[in-house]
Length: 392
Image (cartoon, rainbow, N blue to C red; front, side, top):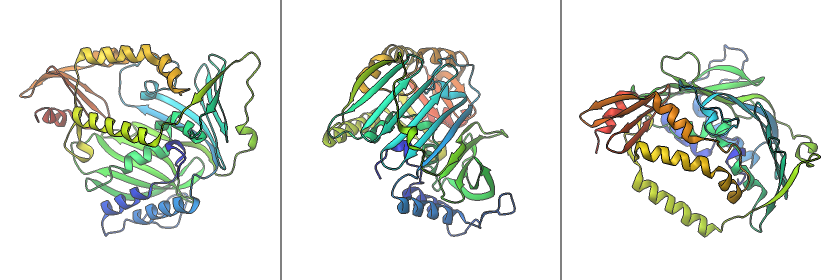
């Protein structure tokens, strides 16, 4: 299935195998006493059904709906950028509207308080419209480039499926998996799969994954931090219909007075892409060290305070240039450096046998910037991250 991560709505078959191994032989059957009532399913059966649905449809189901993402991580007040990029997604509530039709038909709309961006793909025709600048960009495809490659520019972190894939990737021997009462999500009956870290050092209490009761598509993912009754992070449909959208949803005509541009989308050769990925993996292996495993793993990489500030400044200055080189993108950020400055103000000085540094804590993540030039990040308690700092 080649549709881009954004429109892969079925749970991956590999994830089903991983979940099955994590659960073990004893079935955990869904409670059906809640409202709505669905047929009983064990966790193994749910993931098997989801995998079978992917094989049966051979692609994403035609659908339309609204996805809402809410984050309450306990961060200090963040700079307002007016966009829906990575910085803004760290707090507050944001939504996108999606339409997916038969073949290469895709539309993504991202409304913000002051404007809206639209990506419309209809076969070989593609447009990107930004109401803030009143600019309509027509996308021209080089030979070998596919219209569905445009999905790579969509906000993948805001889809229930993308969140589900990340969560299920951690479902191994470190995770207790069960099925709880059924629920109603976006007006549809759904099963709730619950993943709980076994290690007490994790900041995550549990993750709830809602699967549609009819086609087993992920409808919602909720991440609960320890000690919190409300999810610290949630992404899911507030409205969804699994029927082909009307054709007019995929047509676009630049509004009167709009600035019309053209940009070319070039597909890299497969060998070039493989070499680039191999180089990225090599650099990551050299620069990043992982301490621990499962839910309590900590990433350690070389970084200093001046490095972070300098990188933030470069990203802020390079936003428009990067957009011109790579084509239209959703949510380019205005000022990453401002975020770094704001978050560092909330840091607490800490020290121990490993040295000294600044500690930043949120509901779901702990960050330690050491004075000897290391940055440690993990969804772990401060005790776990300082323990990791002592591993050389």
